[in-house]
Image (cartoon, rainbow, N blue to C red; front, side, top):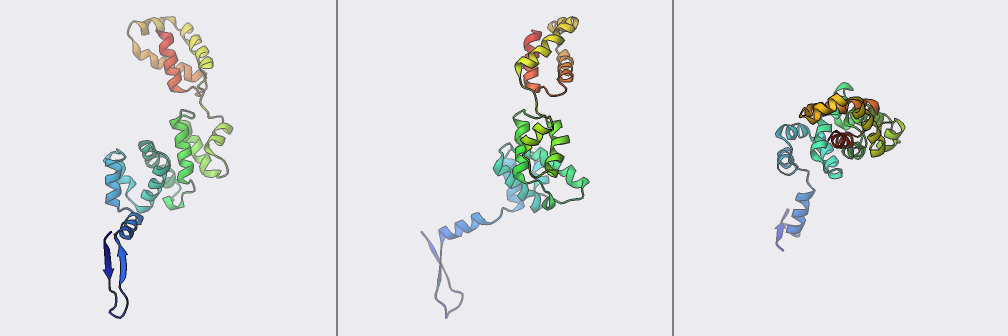
Length: 212
């Protein structure tokens, strides 16, 4: 191990600084905006625009750094930062350092969407503000209380899909003859009849199977 000697004053004893100590010091220093910009592009795989916005200020970058240490879905995190979070701060004339929602709680919200437990629209339009206003409850607890949880029950959704398929035999025949765009119509019907709570992925798979 190399040692570096520093003589601040001829009357004082030399100070020994190890290479290990210097490396630890470098690691403890905050990353520079340019370093973070490159990290977000090269390591996180984010578009240049995202990286630029996220490193626009030190405070935003530090919030995103903490958020990224909790959830590894970097693009989803970036979308939330550049979308709902930015809009909320602009509307409330707040800076990120005044934002009451911690990175940990925002990560919980992102996780609910990524796990298909809550739709993005319900999470961003309803649950997000509720989570900001109520610091005592988790994202999951609020989603349950607000009746925002998506329905992934294949039995329940299957019954709805069966009813829709039986109601539109001509559309089913057209779909089977190649008009695959009709799947959107069937999905719309299923989402309407489930009051918007159907898990889109599960609903899509069920309808495809039943339509043949």
